[in-house]
View (cartoon, rainbow, N blue to C red):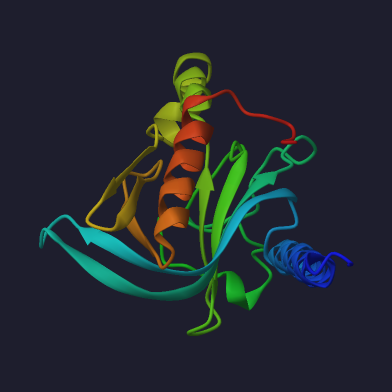
Length: 208
């Protein structure tokens, strides 16, 4: 008698291949879409299909839900060629300043582009996307020591990340605090661990 499991195995293998193919195309699509907003994208590190954003209001001591909801991605940026930020780039936007979809009402960043990584939410709610530059803490510390004049003109703080109340809480370089709610619980932990790793380690040129 033949192996009754052969057909079942073929179907499972085919389904597994289809899933891998779909994941490949999804990553490629996300990479290409992000590249329209941040042309310095070099490598997609992680993505999850559904996330939303809150911002901490220090005066009212509460979270405010922002109008950003959609695919969240974290990616490696290529800052080796053009080391300066374009004019009018806001604190949570490393996006193309000529693109009307790149607006975000944050503190304006100036000076050298030191943001090795980026976080973006491709917004389903309106044309504005949410994005945040991620820079290793070692780079901020070196900047404070070796580029004191720039630090006086444009002071930046080391970033921080934690998980609390179902949110990945991120403090950016301008001491603005955002809470990222992620639909998939496992992805929430993975994103926290990835951001923590990026902040605590020296910047990388590529990930394998």
